[in-house]
Image (tube, rainbow, N blue to C red; front, side, top):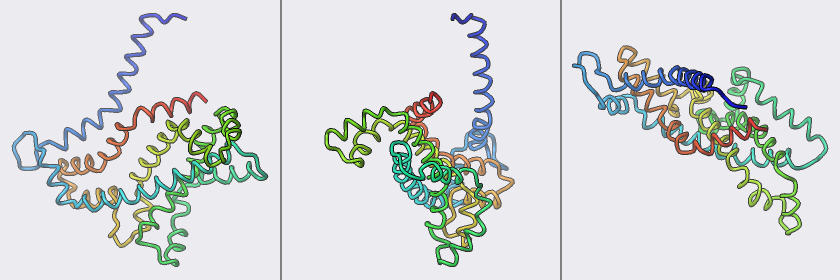
Length: 267
């Protein structure tokens, strides 16, 4: 079916409009982050980033976020691959009810469990630790990762696993040498999403680390905002600093991310 020039033009107009709508807040923040601070003449002030970094102490909060994200992304990826492989390729008793139990983790918001979980971790002496911040997010991420990778592994031809078994490969070898490389786009998509969710998590880090020593990047930005509410240029520079790692990761992995998303939509 041929598409007329008018339809093509309208499609581009709509896409450009949506792109402008999405990019306008980002460009506004970027422009504000290099604008003149209060009482200074107009100009381009890249020094806002240095001042925001120094005053806001973003070095420590970004370091805490990197540690938490490494724990969450690493554990969630490994465990989700194993669980998705089991639910997607194996048949065992209770698989369906157990899979639905995993899905419950996607349906219950963190706000509903965060307070009792805090008291449980406090009784174990784990509050104000990286584990207290990371482990609840690992549990949430495994629920999504299992759901995502189960669909990926179920869509793969069973002949791959059968051929690996005929060649003498164990189930673990078939997973690591055949299925994981074939599912790389889906795994990268999950990795990027889990990293973004973990990096932007605010409530869990706030409740589980009340001492403030392990303040993550969003908490650091909130604390910085409380000190410099009127200085919009420094606040915007701090926001750019906090958002930059996720932007870099997405740009670095965007090809695999988009491919994984498109494959998921196709299935």
